Structures are given as structure tokens and as C-alpha cells.
Length: 114
Length: 109
Image 1 (cartoon, one colour):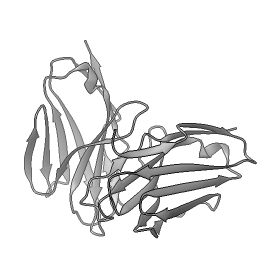
Image 2: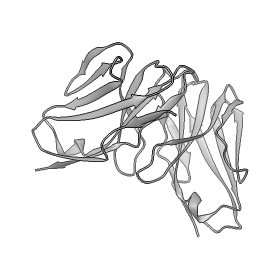
Image 3: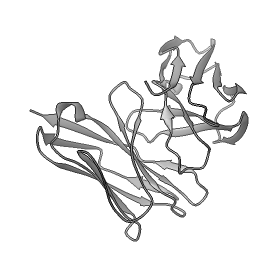
Image 4: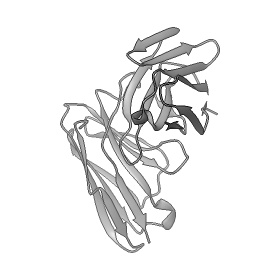
């Protein structure tokens, strides 16, 4: 248990569906992150939030839409995805967005787009 | 561009010692992390180096040479549970974290 939870753990969706991924952290951290992890590739940072404000968006397609209603919760809304979006989506949190602080990861959502 | 290099896969024997190397080229340096990730699980923090030298933490040690852009993770007395991927990540001058692709470590009896 890292103090970061994610739901669902597995998700299969068609290209026309709309779904949302949820992340919650119980660590009192101020920063939250969405990552995409594909096989044999580095972790790809998608979005960064600091105190509910988005501070980074790494050229992510608009079919991915993040939402951070408060510092403990983070969502990733998905719509009209492509098969190449199939991957493990990881949420993480840290004390702040400064890279000196370790990140705590959730277990991830394994997404399959059919 | 910014780059982190680490071997894709390594194999070692239970009870032995293994060294996983990481080299980096980044715009500035503000620390290097090692994370462990078991198959199907989240990455978990192992170590953080910001100064040159060796940091020991039980069976695991991490070394850093900033002048060479080089780090290694040393695992001693290997156990089967150490089979996992090991991720190297560097914080650049803007305090952004740059990740390597990870090294898959296979432990054989």
C-alpha cells in the first residue's frame, strides 16, 4: 500500500466509449501526476497538478482530459480513444512538483482499447 | 535532447551480486532516483542521490558520479523477490523528472 489508490484496475473500452479513471491519494501531498506506461518505453508524463492547478501538459491529445477537483483526487476522462492508447495508466503524488521529492505511485489502470 | 540509458534486461543468480548501470545526458542535474517495479505493480522508491558517492541501504546501494553522468544500483545477496524492473530517473535543471525505460532483472535459482 503506497497511499495512492486507482480505480478501475482494468478497463476495456471501444473507440467510441467515454470512461474515466480515478485516483486518490491519502498522503497529504500537494502534487499529482498522470503517467502512461507502454512496454519497454520510459514512463511518459501526461499531466501534472500542483494544488489543483494544472502546471504541465506534455502535448497530450485532447481525447485525454484531466480533472483535479481537490488536492486528494485526480481524474482522467477518456473519449474516442485509439488502439495505440492501450497501456498502463499510472497516477502518482509527491510532496511538491519539485523533482527532488520521491513520487508515490498507485497500482495503475490497465487500459485496452478495442 | 535529454536521455537516460540503462540496459533492457539482465540475468543474475540467487545469492549473487548484480550492478545495474544508468547513464544520463540532461539539461542540468538536481538528483537521481532509482525505483523498483514488480510486474503488474506500481513503481516504488528505492533511493535518491544528489551528491557523488555511494549510498547504502541494506542489501541495496546506489552510486552517483555527476562528472561522468553515471549511476549504478548494486543489489547484494539476491533473492527471487528481487526479480523486477529497475527504473532510473533524473531531475533536470527545471526540476522535471526524466525517466529511463527500465532494466528488467531476472533472478535464477
